[in-house]
Length: 250
Image (cartoon, rainbow, N blue to C red):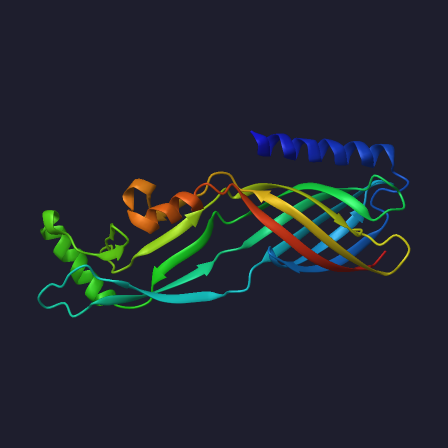
């Protein structure tokens, strides 16, 4: 509901300003590049009036992968596998639409509202080896339901699928309202080049953690792992700090 209201407000605001201030709306443009906790981004900014400017852009996070291992909880005759190599990566590729409000015509201080839209699997973890052995484990589990084996994730047993794959992911809302404050203009007022710094938050709702497409609850994991999972699923926002450099093209 909140996402629909925010989007409606953005559309109405842009339409009203463009109608009432046609002498300034969409007359000036700038292209920008930014870097920060949202990754690396490129955008196009335009003026909508004396107090409003608008940005639309694309952002992505460089493919940084982290490698580790998970232990197999037991051994089965004919399967020589004690641990499995796993890999984790962030999946951040999204579009952004941001509306900047400047209380003063001359000041660069602004309030920003808008949204980001992209992938809902924010972090993914998957195995990179041991597929043949994991296929054998999956076949064993199919024949021995009471005595299943798999990878140990705290107290949780992560079973491989029939293709020898295991996966887990951190799931958030694919459409995320954004609110922020900052200094700088989407389109420089009196110079060709401008700089902007902005601090805000993306609201991505209540995150969930999935293993093999099954949502995990804190009760599924014991000890420290359960506490970590409980904390992860109680963080509804993603902090954003961005630095932007732009050039006026019109």
